Length: 288
Picture 1 (cartoon, rainbow, N blue to C red):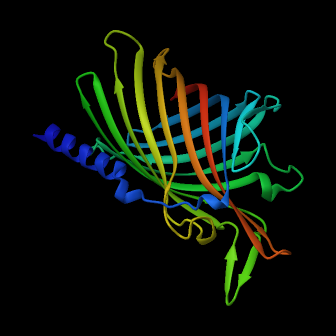
Picture 2: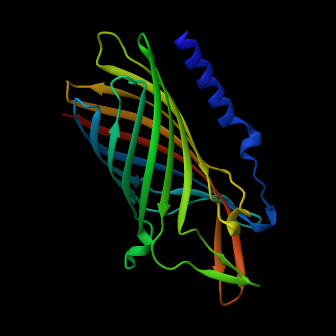
């Protein structure tokens, strides 16, 4: 009975996430658009300290590198798709500190909260406000295991805070801003994993959708939309009780409406940006 209720709830949530009515958005083609395709290599490390009370402290580092070359397309122009001469370079890093709690009587439910420092390598290094972002998040994860199979659903509320000045434009008595000072998102992730008997392997697959919660009025007329869809397939190789390696492939589809305010000219340039990213990654996990 419990497994049936869990399966019904999981299916209901999945249907809600995938419902087109819940995430309808409109786009004016006259604003212009661009599409990019890129490949990345990702390297990470995760250190976790667990206590008997159900509390765990986690420190995580994630480094991302572009492997060079970028296929880009600009709609509505004479530009044809071409591979840009972009050398392999550092793209981003994420440094995360988080604390999680799992009650002994409710082991199928876990809550966690944390902070992430985001460093972007494709920005102006002379201005710290251009390449640094701050993230805060709170998550609830429900999980269920049936024999060798495990299923989980995570809902994460996250805000990303920008530093420095934000360009603005006066429209009558209203002030329009190029970006929000703090963007809010809901990240919904469903994962299925299989624990191989007598083998230190755990293959898995998951999908995650990132939905805006306070889309900027200039960027999308205040309408919310799906900003990212990520799918990952991989396997965890548990070397021993404390050490493990995670090998994975990730496909990331991104959609954004980029606003560029020109205060001197009194205009706003809007560009619909779509990105298709393929990433190969490896992460080291240590539990103590």
